[in-house]
Length: 462
Image (cartoon, rainbow, N blue to C red; front, side, top):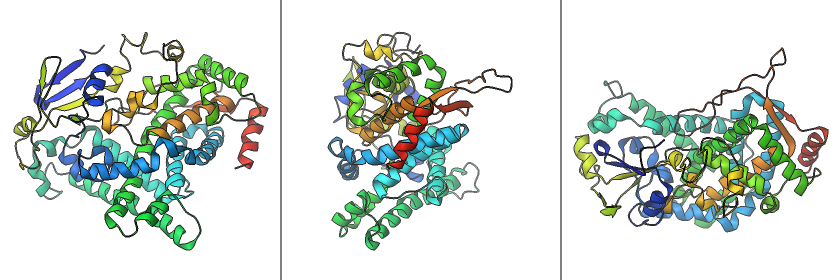
């Protein structure tokens, strides 16, 4: 299916890794060499310099990473559990009420969870902040899928007015910058105001209290919040919406997951995180979702900061094209370090590791020697080495809990037309930076009256 473990594109000085072992060897083990990011004018002009994902491996990156780890490290993730339980329960209600708005509901879950966990804010999808965040994520994803090729080829265009031919990117960059400014400031100000007025506290507010005399750290805190909102809004949304589509198309697997929950937990309560190790088939469904439908199929590029060799091939470092202010893209390609791109899609479909890789088969994880309970750090969708996703623990627990709650309470099936026939679901996905299902129609109902009562009773206890 894929042309080899390593594919080199000379014109781009780009090395694509289709093998998980190669990615682990280079990006996971040689972190001193492969922890940098590719520099681009698109990133610089469109706000990428305030999103940790796109930072160079630098003191700035380390400062942001420190704050991220303080908030999202594994040892403290349980403080987010109450919010996760509440917000996933809200998702169940929304799915039953208006199943035709699946994408909006999954986006609302991802966003509202970040607002309440970071800012202590209960913001619904119609709030101006939430709408602005959704618009920002949409623009961000479209921009960073392909960048601005004309700008990358002719960097001098950044000095020209927006009406100059080929400079349409300037208006997009300007609009995106303003929206990122709003994301930095608006929820932050609400959280700080709540702290000052005694109406509530939050993770953000606690960080501000400890660093109120350090303006540079306050700026990092704001940008951490924005980066978290953008990442959660699309990556968590992608995984959950993929699960809802795929499980609808595989009712037999849905029944198996439901049966395990009924057998282990019963029908009188919803699953909790304490049940996770007792639900291997539910875990296998989660692992298979992350394998077959990674949120970002072509992982974010790493760059070699030193000369290296692997399997007899020379991998060159380089000089920053920005520091030299180059105008010829062909020359800058060879002066910048080799870009190493982890092809998550190919790794997750390696026929040497996964039989029938294009089929959704959770049992493959039950039958593996290590079993279904893989470390979150072994899920390739979350990245490699020092550039692994800093929010992976909250993403992991949110997606798992959603899968468990949905299986425990809902039946997802194809919708029927007026004559009682199944309405076909193509099962297509977008071809955007963050992958998620194309719109489709389905039926989402409580499994039975007991499940409906359980959802309602649990909601009353919130």
